[in-house]
Length: 165
Image (cartoon, rainbow, N blue to C red; front, side, top):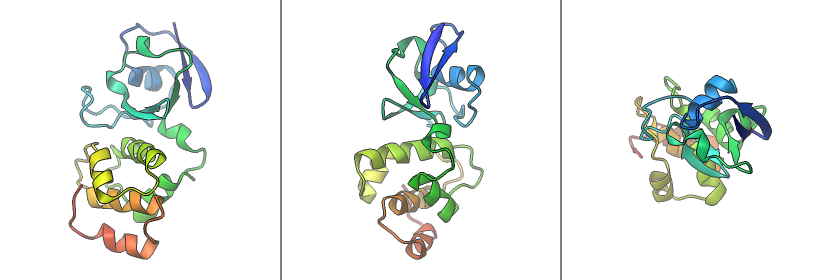
């Protein structure tokens, strides 16, 4: 049995030690906002925060999680979608299919926790998640909006440019 602190609550999960954290979160705890994408830590759909750092949960065995570790999923970012990143995502209408967006939001939130006023270069380096719909220009604009670098009007303009991250 593993004991996981997810979104501030302790969960006892019955899983094999090599079970990826992603499956414990989704199947055992029932938090399905964290998505399975590639299974090899490349796409980022499974991104969560582990002690404040963004990680790819599909590649982390439950056995490597320590008792004091804090895991935050998209459901734990805010109770009512009031986190600045979530608000910016909605204001700019970032998602198309939406599948990767919880991982994108978690990566953006981790970036802004470290660099509250990121440059385009900072965003490009930190946002390594894959979006098959290609909404990278909206993602960048939403990160800037969440950081307070743009206003809604200018973010709308930024969301229509052809710049990619």
